[in-house]
Length: 119
Figure 1 (cartoon, helix red, strand yellow):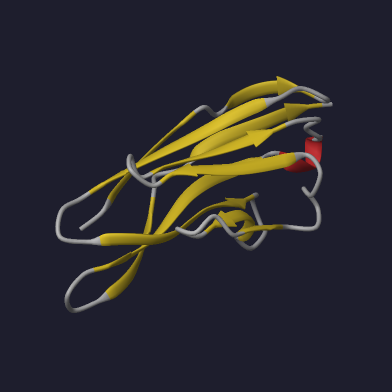
Figure 2: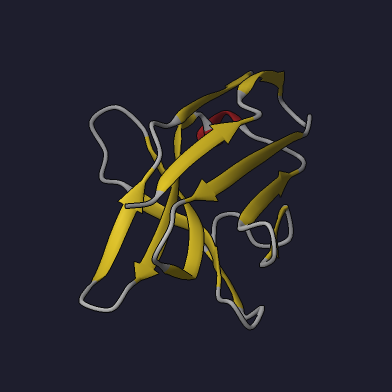
């Protein structure tokens, strides 16, 4: 199993910045892609950004230019730097990781951290 622990959420004014961090732990598995998703009430969960072990990144169109994702493979951590935040960014943000062991490839989720951007 993989456990994901998130931190960094909070309340910020429009135009402000936040840094979200996620640390993955677990034995007997290799973590491939890590990413951040978000979900606002009444809406589907959507990808914000992802990064592979090799460093290939992908961003949602709505956050391109405002968000940067980075990763430390040795520590199995992923960070999401968010700048120029907008009220539309308000959501619960979830860390996600794909982990592979001898038998399975599975997706794991953190508990989520709330990001609120005041207008």
